[in-house]
Image (tube, rainbow, N blue to C red; front, side, top):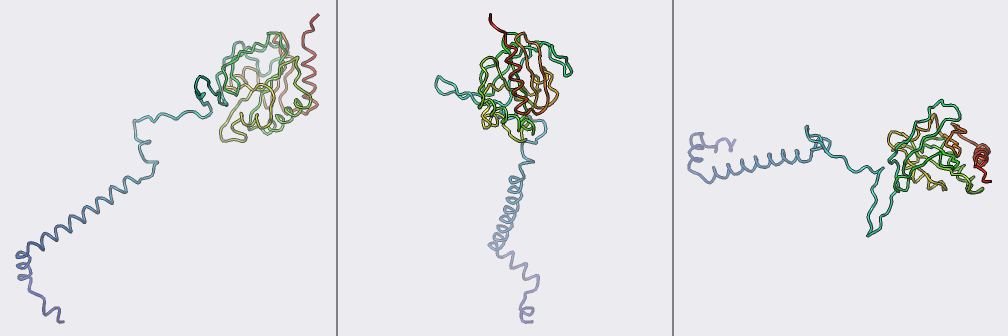
Length: 253
């Protein structure tokens, strides 16, 4: 009750405010500071918005993609260059492809491709007088995952026949699937021969009539297909393929 009795009438309060400019300035200062704080909070919230809604989604602006890690470029070291592993590479088919359902005796096409060590493309001509046994593998295929170490162990125990070429082709590469990158997978399984890499469109596998994994093609010295097989092989079946390949080597008289 004492507080109410001691309060001044409104007319007197207004007169007091007019006579006290310092009080007015102080009030205005508090209002300005308050507005500054509010504006600061608003702009701070805008700067901390999720990255999903940042500049990479501004309409009309193309963000260039970063380097493809599956195709690392060689790193220059002085005058020498260090070749880095490749998971895919350049492929050029230099002949007619083998149909998936082709009869034995079809002529295999020449091709130009890279090894998975990142070296320059190599041209393979199946009709150059060398008998070749070519295996096609996908790193994510369960049958390939069993066959690659099986064949690698067989070759380690029995040796790589000098009379023929045994080649591997890494194809159908898929990031985010088991045994990626395949270059490391082949190295871990101690694959002892050259490994070629297919391109993004798997042109090399298609040119050799691949129908399933694993896939083997035996080509004689004239470039003709002698044997084709799809599916996982036992050690005995692979040994038979090697023996068959050696039997096709031209005899020098």
